[in-house]
Image (cartoon, rainbow over all chains, first blue to last red; front, side, top):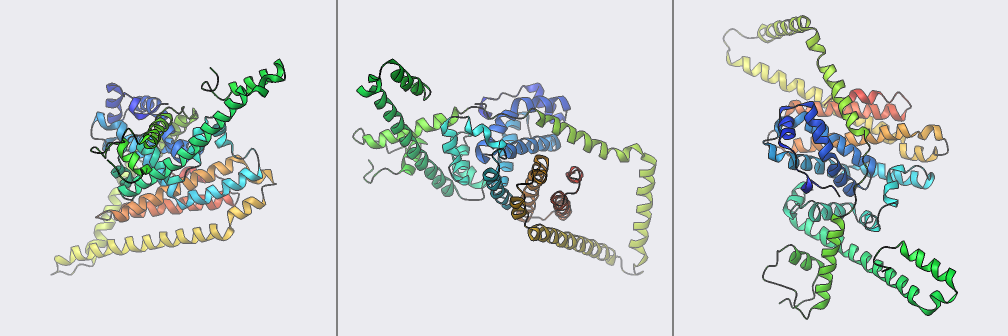
Length: 222
Length: 226
């Protein structure tokens, strides 16, 4: 996954951004936008909102690049602005009202929630992440993936470092339960495969069970 | 050595190096296993795939910037008219400022001008706040969400472009609200910026009312000028 820590903004691009050059902004967008999108989409769990965050973040970069102190701080500045835009959307009453409307749409029309189709096709940890509360999800992502400290997260969210710590613990409690369930279901699938009845019906049935399990993941079948 | 059972928060603190003197003992296999699970989950989170990003986002940003630049350069295209406007505005301003000054009161100049500025800003801001409140009441009174769910059957009323515009407008409103809240947190209030933000809020709410009322959604395009 593209993250901010993997990005090395070339000096020419960084200098161009500070000088307000259009081509440099385009290059900066090409290099940084994916990391911004990943951050925003994981926090917000809404692709359309995340794209808005990408858009607003880079509009800010174009408009306020003169505020950036040095070439070395561009990535940190962009990440900070992106986090602020994402958190602002998360805690907005407009976001809550819109989310309610989205829920209506999802049940009313199967095609209404196109922005979330990517979640259905991604690994299950993504869905476990989605099931966390908004704040717990934001904290686990900012702390464990983006590398923010609890103090920084507390400041970003207008709360304390203790709040951040408790949200992180809450997130892991849920994720550990999810992981336990995942391990149990994997074990049950393996047991079904290795039980005498699984292959007794002849080649076809046994072959079907093996093929189905093959979709679970490389750890299930060696 | 820790006597009480290991909590998740303890294990997280241990993982993050906050409990340097403590450690999970060899005989505390359960805690060690849980710590390993936490580390494994963190690694999994870091290795999740990229979320697809629409290729048109940069074009939208570039177009928006071009649009604003063109709007901003309108003054520069008519430099003589601009210079004349500034000159006449200055003359009128100076006339208004000095026409009421008493002959012996040089100190009253500052007093007069300062009060005028504060009063003007106060009235303007109050008016914007009132407009904002009225528009919000209109939006709430119309109960758009209830109306939307009752109109789901009518595909023409839930067109994706309209929903998309509403989403964008609400995102922008949240952004403005956040910026306003930050202004109030600041040590020194930036009065001009506060007024500009409230004006933008009113514009956005008007656009939202228009979009929900079936008016041309392109109104929104002009409201994002900051």
